[in-house]
Image 1 (tube, rainbow, N blue to C red):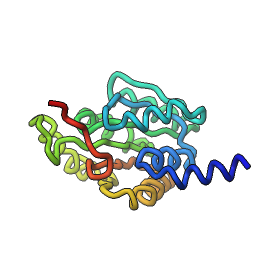
Image 2: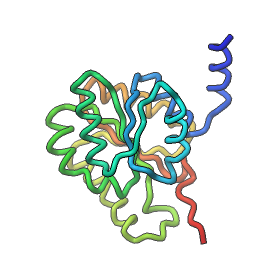
Image 3: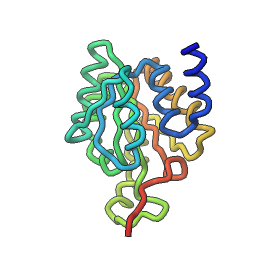
Length: 183
């Protein structure tokens, strides 16, 4: 009975954050360090509430990448949650750790700097994120629609693990609703 109830709940709760959580769980990704972000808050709260996951905040994105990298070397799978501006700090750790040591680093990046962004710094970082990923030859996907999220996230995680290469899943405001700017 409990399994049937879980399946019913999973199919009826089709929010972007519930899809990400279920996809992580299905792919045995249980370690989730993150840098706090308002857009990712529903996902972060649900990860904390689920005993399957070890979820905690880090001071910087590079710290989260180091934790997930060490976990992979110890036999555990992890993913990092961050926003676009935090990604801007990662070029060195990606080029010197994740790529050469073949760490299947799963990055979920809430996208800022587009679609009504008021902060010019966020806009600059947003415009540089994809070129940086391309220059490091890292797989990345921008997800804009709920109906494509599960397929892209699931397949990207599987590919990252089997090829032992990082992947960035960029969660566009069209998917998440973005950051709400209070007046």
